[in-house]
Amino acid sequence: MQEADDFFAESEALAGLVNELPDLSITTQFKSWRIVDVLGHLAIWNEAASLTYRDPSAFATFIENMMANFQSGGTLRDYEARLLTNLTDDEIRDRWWASAVDTYQCYADVDPKHRVAWGGPAMSVRSCISARLMETWAHAQAIYDVVGRVRVDTDRLRHIVMLGLNTIGFNFSVHGDSPPDIVPTLILEAPSGETWTFGDLDTNECIQGTATEFCQVVTQVRHIADTELAVSGPIATRWMAIAQCFAGPATTPPAPGSRFRIN
Image (cartoon, rainbow, N blue to C red; front, side, top):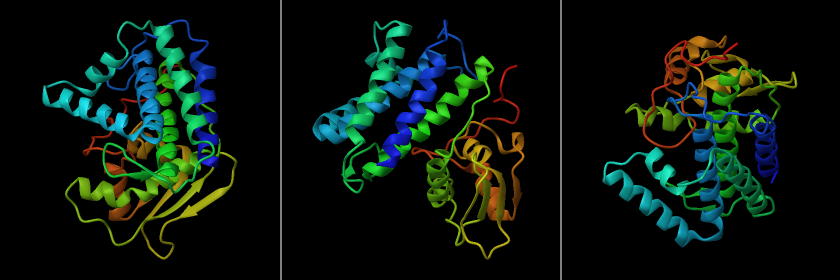
């Protein structure tokens, strides 16, 4: 699957950054997580993606244990920390990289339509590995920001654009609104310079700008006000205010000005 190849390429790009960092304990702008917390989170959920394909019963136990943690008042970070107990920062970085390699090898040559369990409804393995790519890219932004690096994106972003587009109905419904009857037109400049056009083309609802900034908004690593996206129409405006291409309950985007690259 191309999605698996692109997930691995995105993981390699992040490895190229974090492998040269002497201090993984730096606090990022994402919920005050440290860099090592970001890597630990990615490691746990890469491992979960491999587990749900290879051993569905073990994955079910993983989810049951997580829910029991929630019911006892624990947080997701508490649960992940338990799974990473007694590991040094460097060992967590190594575990993340091992998880990326293993997940890639697990998904590289499988039927894209095969369905696997996840925290919510079952999904295709194509969707599962696309979600791993999305999370890797999105969480990496916090690391790029805090160390002051400019990320050079690629057209791998197309997968994240499609996730953003495909979750518009979910975005509205999770906020208690009826899903819109139309999908705003997307006119996005890809990193390669190509123009990507999606959505309903015969509507005045439109979002125009770079694919990078669109992906930053739908992954909630930037507030829409901190981008140069041109948004027109009430549906498009509402969507960009609540967009999240990841599963779970409604999550508030970062406040304007709270996520940025540190110079």
